[in-house]
Image (cartoon, rainbow, N blue to C red):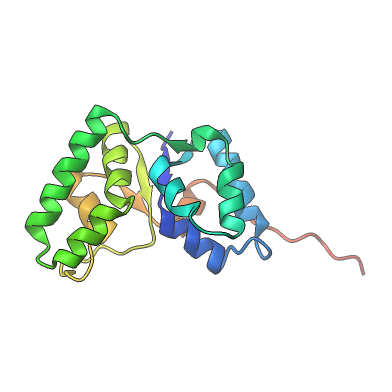
Length: 168
C-alpha cells in the first residue's frame, strides 16, 4: 500500500479553491477516511504552518487525529534534511529561494518521505530551470522521492464525490 504525505500548499489551495469546505466537504472527509486506513498523513511542521491562521483549515487541522501529523525530528530525518539543504544551496543561486525553502516545511516533508517511504502530494511542477524558487518535485527527483498532485492522489485512492439526488 502506498502511503502519502500531503504538503501545506495542497491543503491551503484545496481550501481556497475547488475543495472549499462549503463546496466539497467530501474532500475533507476523504482525507480523514484515508488517514484512518493508513494511507494519508502529513508532518508536524505542516501542522505548525497551518495552525498559524484563523480559518476552517486551522479548525480541521486541530481536529485531525494526532497521528495524522507524523514527527519529523528523528536522527535519520534530520540527516536527510541536512543533505537536502546542502543540495539546494549548491543548485539554486538565489539566496532568497534557498532561504524560503529552508524556512518552510517542504524540506522536512521530503526528508520524512525519503526516510519513511512516503509519496509526496504537492501542487508544484517539476521545473529544472527554476531559480526563483525551489520546486518540491525538483528535490523529489534528485532524492528519489515519488510525488503526485491532489488530482492524482484522489485518483489513486479511488475517491469519488457525488451529489444527492434532488426530489422532484
